[in-house]
Length: 164
Image 1 (cartoon, rainbow, N blue to C red):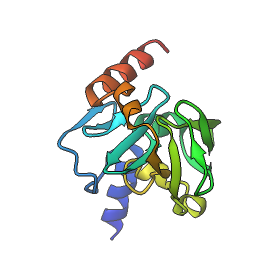
Image 2 (tube, rainbow, N blue to C red):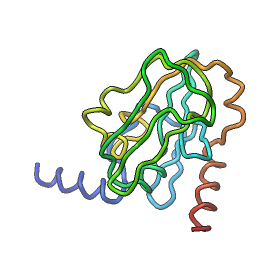
Image 3 (tube, rainbow, N blue to C red):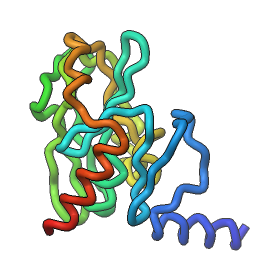
């Protein structure tokens, strides 16, 4: 048990995931211990979208949570509200800063991850699984075309990190 706890805390400190993702990506790209999953779309503001049928799940990327540090509070919209592409729909507060969360696409909020109210750290430990933020019914699925794929987002992050 102690060994498992040590391994888990070490993996978390190194931003290495020891669990399998239910998103079942075909490919996971990694740079500096930040994961970028194939099969998702990414916004330059560091949010991800997984579009399945008539539902799109949205969260912040592993890269974003890594830069934020320990997340201590999450503000999310109400179910039934709407979100607009590139506009803020909530906020994430970490020990370092508070950051707005922008929606990569427009739509109606059909579900909010209420687990984040009690356990905001899910965003750090599982940004693509348990740390998702909202599910929406997209009003304009064509907006997905303007987002980056995994390779483009990885390159974007590398260039952004190099410029800082």
